[in-house]
Image (cartoon, rainbow, N blue to C red):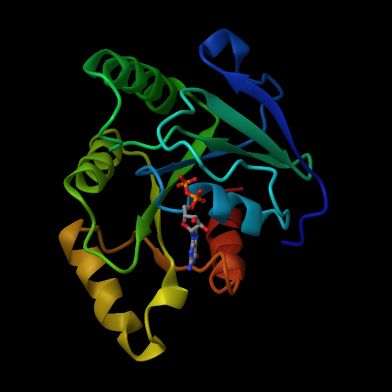
Length: 193
Ligand code: GDP
């Protein structure tokens, strides 16, 4: 998909603020600093609509990006940032859980992981959470440009095995630097539309 229109329509903290135009939604989840904002910007062909994080863990809102009047990307605050308090983590958990389990227009969660390293315990927890609630997961392993091409398959396998991914769930290699994986990710998204 060639994106020419994308805008952030709301930064929501509670369900009453979610958009009500019924468009399909795709949530983006990942640990802080994994490259989530860079992923969004690359997918929508913009330099900096989604803020790339100078302060990891800061955004405690759900940011709704409307794309081509066809769908929303919903940026979920990154997890696993050590410096947030227990109270903040709990508030994060409640907001995310409410959104992920109660949102009828949610089609799938795009779980962003770092191709360079095995998924973290938090990544595994997020994947298991999605499976538990029968929410389709599209796993995107980013920063592929940091790994030589010859090792991509090996790293991909580590991600798949560490997350104990279900056979049907796709895993896509991605790079916000080179654009590898952009088309493939759009193809997966469009299967839900
Ligand atoms: P977020 O906290 O998950 O939104 O992460 P950001 O998008 O802000 O990215 C965190 C850091 O990783 C930044 O320095 C980015 O430039 C870098 N980064 C993100 N994606 C890629 C990628 O695909 N390749 C490379 N080499 N660096 C990336």
